[in-house]
Image (cartoon, rainbow, N blue to C red; front, side, top):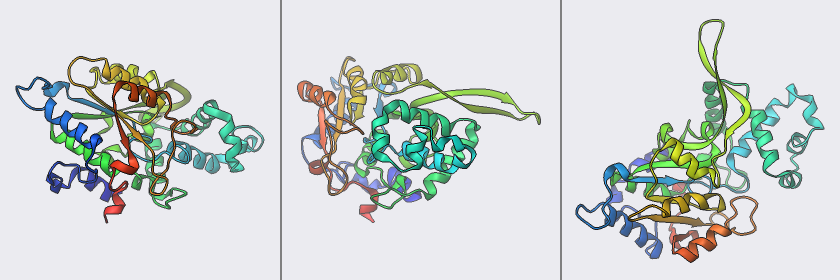
Length: 324
């Protein structure tokens, strides 16, 4: 995992011409470089003051792989299996029965409500510190079912380069994701160079408690407080960042409102979508996919001239381990 973090901040050889060596030359790359140049040239008509250089990125499917299931769901499934001995009722109770039986077809029909129920059951009843430690331990041992690599190996090298290039031009980079905020915060700084205070995500209720020994803790409760997806993303940006982004990147319909909110601001704006088109090196999916569906947002991007990154055409490499 440390090697990935190095790639996020190093590669000053990323002064290789333009800082995006893993991108093929084409309209997508040129539109990114043009936007950065226009908005950071003092005295230019599109110059953006440093304080307003806010760039927001979705996580699942935009910064790392999200197939065959969202990685936080994989984490929750493993937690269900680990905790099952304490909950014999789960053997017959959905959605836990399907999880324990590895019945993915049944799980797929249960929908978002079931996913939330699984996450609530496995993420609650712990202190925030204990939960963070559990996430870090899982990431150190769990392997992706197709690539047989740690999940944090499956970040996108071209997007790592883009994050670093933006920061080199004094942009502040944020994650704005439907994923759980406390699932992401333990590792995003090491992997993406994005510190925990710049992560916006779905959050559960936490409660302050004073233990008998006088130690104060925050306890996670089995209740979702805020869903940072779809129309929740602009709300989350306003609530936790307080500035409208000038650049936003997503990959699915869950990012549409974030891109619309970004586009509605004055001055220069950049709206981007990652289109998963490479079934050989990663995955190919869009409109009919139950994970990361890209349908209405794709149509709007085409209509409004937003930048669509074709993974197969635009990226020379996808993962950092391809460079080793």
